[in-house]
Image (cartoon, rainbow, N blue to C red; front, side, top):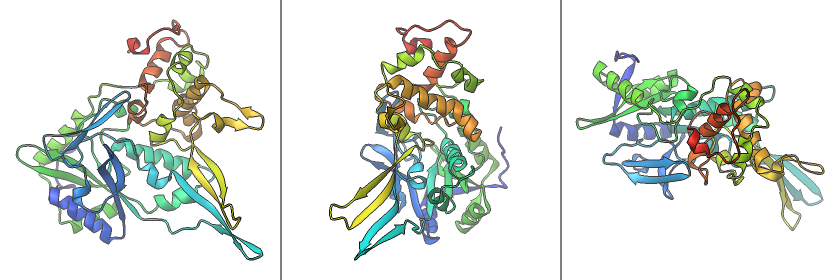
Length: 389
């Protein structure tokens, strides 16, 4: 049970969220938050309270996503949309070098741009965990990505605790939610009932405490704190889970498991799962030039291990089949990622399940391999994965 004392918690009314946005803007931040766009709840730059998806929620299932109206005015009454905060910290495309002809000489201009100051409003606990994973990838090793590092160092994070779990969520079994305990400046828990619509706020950093003080947030009562904790516990009841016990060795020991053939008959190698994943970081480099020969540039763009060209080396691609590419993705995500970065590459957000056109479920694939893995009865190609749940 979480803390119920009010000394370290504050209350913000709905109007206080508008004041929070304005305050962060005055401090020089571009505020990014959820907004309704093109039939989905997307992460975009927002300017005012009205930009938030008030009264909207999402309906998710394997291969299915819809937004629909709620019967209340909740600002954060949804799970996660197709976009993550990765788009701001590790942009889909980035110009690294620019070359311009200046008479008889050639100027090489490196991209040393001024990094934007972002304030993220509405970061879920699983997404905080995803940001921490990418911190280890881009900042925690021998080499640091200067573009990620420059953007990451400027971010102010307002997290939102989960009070409802989506059908695709399995963060509870991954230990990444539904409650955020670190990695935020301010965390909000939305409480909406017949009596009130407000937010219980807690500061995670000195900067967060200063913001709450400037908002003149009043102390929360023990009753409100208890109500907030109960709401978060409600979201820990999830229909999906992943058994992570020994998962690294499980996948290493089942390289030739027949389930890889089974999933290959369904996988389209469309790369949707990697594009929506908040931790995937694969990129490719492209050199482009104008036909006049006056200007050229080198761009870094998101790529995916599901594309055949991604594993290309001189003479051809290493992974030519859907089977080999899916196996590479899932084994890296859940096994070799642990060897590289000391943690799983999956945070249980469920995006890969929702946005897979054919509804492949990573939790079900782990279950199938565990059920018919080493020292267990094998699974035949014709078995229906969904019957194993």
